[in-house]
Amino acid sequence: MAELVFVKLGGSLITDKNVEASASPEVIRRLAREVRRVRDSASDLRLVLGHGSGSFGHIVAQRYGVHRGCTDWHGYAYTSAAAARLNRLVADLFLEEGVPVVSLQPSASARCRRGELIELAWHPVEQLLQRGVVPLVYGDVALDEEWGSTIASTEIVFAYLARRLKPQRILLVGEVKGIYSADPHDDPSARLIARMCADELQAQTEGLSGSHGVDVTGGMRSKVLEMAALVREMPALRVVFLSGLEAGLLERALNDRRFNPGTVLAVA
Image (cartoon, rainbow, N blue to C red; front, side, top):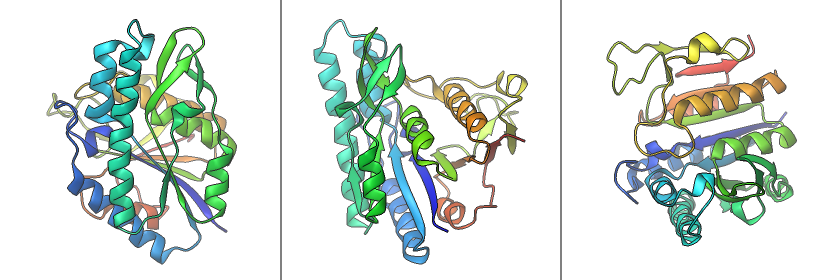
């Protein structure tokens, strides 16, 4: 039976989030090669890829307050263009490595209300999967019925798509090994949490912080809470947080459903 897996490449992994518009093409290319090898060996695996905006979209969005409504709509345009530039780079590198990605711009159809994604064209994703190619989405600007504008993070795009396409797994690939008890960049005593229960998050998320670098979508804590809500709705779903800096880890995680390279978020 074909397995559907969503894979997100975090903005902090594929860019330097502290330096505006600074990509890490060597990391992106290596990850593309890992994905290609998996596709070559597992013909029944279907993938939806996504990536964060990192230092391309987040820094511009923060500058203009796009995530909570623009006062200067030039900022919306600049943020959209910045996110699209990174997406074009990611798409080109994956295509060069033999992964047939097709970029789908979330803002072209997204409709939000107070930051919640309430409408998105998802049939193109379904149809592309049926044709054996890899849909590629990304964190993007979005129009908001109450705020005017907001940011549609890759996580909320994934959550929206997951409720309709029913993936078996979501792999969130970042720069750290998984979810820690505190920010490992700031606290040397932070410990990796191997497993988190979606129904018992309060104690486990108290030490979670925002992002290391500029992130207008709330950092790690918001990612965990968004995915936990999804897992509670879809108990069969397995969400894994892992590092993309260790060569071969994503490839192994895609190939082995039971492998836990970082943190698993599940219902029990």
